[in-house]
Amino acid sequence: MKDEPPVNPEADEPQLRHHPAKRDEGEAIVQGLVESDPAAFLNFLGLQIDGPVTVIETGIFPHILPIDRVLRLKASKPWIGVIGLATSPDPDIASLVEVTFATMLLHGVPGRATVVLVRPEAEHPSVSGEHVERMPNGDVYFQFRYEVVRAWEQPDDRPFADDLDRSGLPELIAELRERAEAGEDDAASESVMCLVFAFSAQGRAHRELRATAAEMERLAPCVLLSHNRREDPRVVSREEGCAVMRMKLYQRGKRRFGEADERIASAISAITSARRLSDLDHLLAWIDSRNLPISTWDELLAWRPTTE
Image 1 (cartoon, one colour):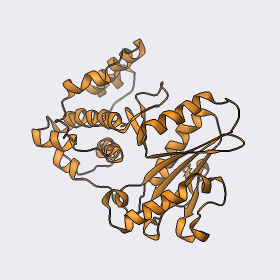
Image 2 (image 1 turned 120 degrees about the horizontal axis):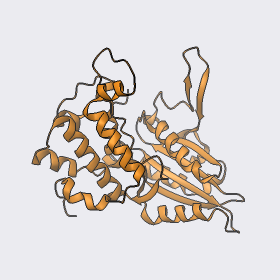
Image 3 (image 1 turned 180 degrees about the horizontal axis):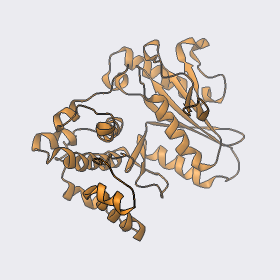
C-alpha cells in the first residue's frame, strides 16, 4: 500500500471544491469579521464589551461519523439499528451511538440504539443506558435512552433474543472478542459502529433509505460526511472522509500553531482512523474552553483520550 504524500491544502483542495451558494459566501464574510476582530464585531451589534474577547471554534463542520459494518435483515416493517460494540473501555461510545442514531432518524423510520460490551474488560461507568441533561433547578430538558448488552451474560452466547440474532451480530461479537483476546491492536483500541437495516420483503417503500443502505454496504467501512447544517449527511468512503478531516486538522492547526513542518505533515497524513481524526478535531475546539495545556503541533498529536 502506497504511503500518502504529506498534507498539502492546495493540492487537496480540488477534491473538496464545490460551488458555494450566496448564503455560504455571506457566512464566510461574517466569519472573517468575527475572527479578525471579535470585539469590534460585538460592538457593531450593540453589545457592551468590558474585557478581552476570544473566539472559540466549535469543531462541527466538516464532520464525519464512522460506519464500520452494515447488516440487513427482513422484517414486517422497516427500522434501523445503531449499534456500538466495545472491546475495551470507551467513554465516548454512548455519545457516538447517540449522534449516529439522531442522524439516521432523519430517514423517518423507527430506530433502535444499543451499546454492546463485547467482554468484561469493556465496562465503563459512562455506559449506563441513558444520557440525561438537566436545568440548573434539576428539571430534565434532554433524555436519550439506549439498550446496554453485556455479551458474556447472555445465554448460549446469543446476545439478542430477537431479529438481531439473525442479522449476523452474534458472529461479529465473537469475532471482535477473539481478536481482542489475541491482542490485535485495531480490535482493542477502537469501538466498532454497526448499522442494521431492516426492510420488509415486499414493497418499495422508503426508497431513499434502501438506496442509502445499499451505498453504505458498497462502501463500508465508510463515513457519513456533513459539510454544513443545511445539507443532509452523505455516504462517502472512509478514505474520502478522512482526507476531508486531515485537511481540516491541518488548516485549523495552522491557524493555532503555525505552519506544520514536513515531519508534522507526514504524521497527519499517516492518520487513517476516522475516530482519531474526529477526536483531534474536538480537541482543537476544546483547547480554549477547557484550558487544555496544548500549544504545539507535537502536544496535539501526542494526545490520547483517557478511559477514566
